[in-house]
Length: 347
Image (cartoon, rainbow, N blue to C red; front, side):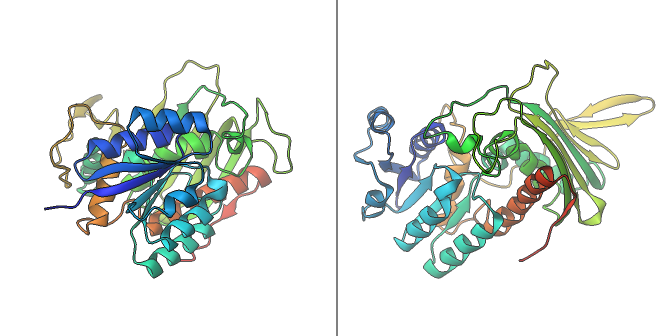
């Protein structure tokens, strides 16, 4: 009989709550401990999900020998040390995004995971949605020819509060602005659909419209524009905002030589008109019986449990996490300097 993985969740903000809900909805996991500095958030999450062990300090959670694995739903500023501490405590770890402040920190995390023999997985939950996996398989099978470009235009239309928990969202380079916190999901998805090609350069610009932070790093961006060049001439283009007065529709399009992915289907131009084709690729991963209502992080948490059991490889694994963080680093560096940034490969 399969053993239930006893999960601890560090951080009880929105992501932590979703992780608790999703883990408890799987047949493979049960949340038995949470750690949260804010007593109100800690007790509310603990009461809502009947979590027996509740701590103010994540080190106390790590000291709980009953915890098998940890979900880190904390800000990236302290992420590296938390990952190292979790692995050193002999526990598997799933790392919320943004995974780190800089890509080099992911190399340290990976080295510690290799030494500990524990599973290290990085979050980008949209990769796990069955529809997105079907789209990726369709692209891999040549349904739109050779991929060459992706375009994202999106608006979140929300400025976060400035307090102890959300300070990092306002500091430039801590990956909490419109790109890192919000639209890095979509950027990761199109890069993943493209087959995770090696990035070669990035050029970007950003606008700060509503600054809440005036420290040395400068305020985080409210609007970000960038383009990434990858091996083989492939390109990724992104325009994203966390506050915009435009009412235009968001866009995520993926272009191939014989078709495009738009609105979760295939679009082609034939005989003078656009036609739509469905995507009916089988989903390669069996998540077993699904709950009646599937929480947003369900597939990701279930994949983490399967990875711990050795049934699948972690996704996102360290190599992808490192390379994608290198893309984010280059975009942020370019927007700050105004110069094109070339991306070195250390793996």
